[in-house]
Image (cartoon, rainbow, N blue to C red; front, side, top):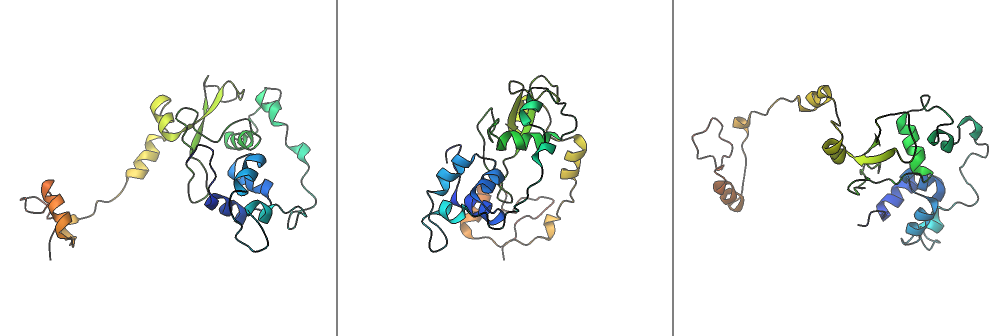
Length: 209
């Protein structure tokens, strides 16, 4: 899959949660033009339409509120980026999503190009990195998106020690009480690794019936 590919499954997921192609593009964090190009490649799932774009474009605005919130309440993103408006009133995640949806940032890791989306909500796991360590400086020369792996390798810990302890706080299974049924092929592979249960070990990991 190319870096900016949008699969049919991603299109259908975005369609199920939105009322128009523009809204679907915002949901996936891509431009309208990019979304339109990919949706036109996939056959429609409903009769009477040629492709997914035609099926979801909703030119009549059905189901979309006619009176939208006053956009003047949200400052122009460019004012935040260029420092004319202080950013302390906005969360980094909100600014990140706006920078992606408005085309200032690509929804990929700027170091390795990672852009795989989680099946649950099709979000790409990316972290805001401020190159000068100033988290109030959103200039385009100072911000980039990094995947968790690149952030850990080149910047620092992705999670705090307390968070990691919570992830690793589990109770080990008493494997001596587990009775595994295994075929001959996999038993031979385990024998090659010395894990066939014949060793005089504390746990009898594999027991054949």
